[in-house]
Length: 177
Image (cartoon, rainbow, N blue to C red):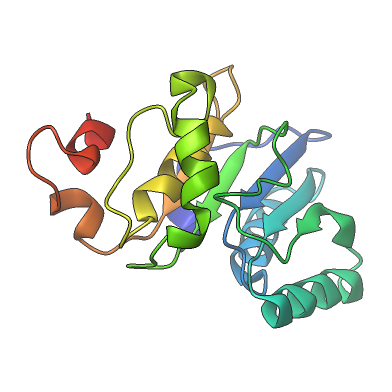
């Protein structure tokens, strides 16, 4: 997944690249991106960001970042990325994620609905999927974090649900459009 994210990319020496995972778990995918970039060009500074909902996993990620000499303040949580984006004004060069499959987003519904009402001025302007699976919300969230220069890249793992669920005109169908 990391290799696919960076296909054809050539990092300029002295540049700073921001990498983000909105469901970062213990930070393994972030670390993988950093290792890949610095292996191809050790003169690129890589800054890692993430958010995690599970309090124990969040603590592990922060501790791991501290041990690796990273800025652990860039790891946010424990809170839901969908209802409490703790990096709301940030944009990133690269985003990589394995959001939870089939995760019910009922606990986030009030905040997500309010943001969806903002249309494309919010993160969920394309529509809302059924509440039993929030994968498409994570994808919309990541799209909202792309830099406006058009040079951001996203790699995300999902199951088949975001590709095939929802009839024409449904939230899922509108998001895919």
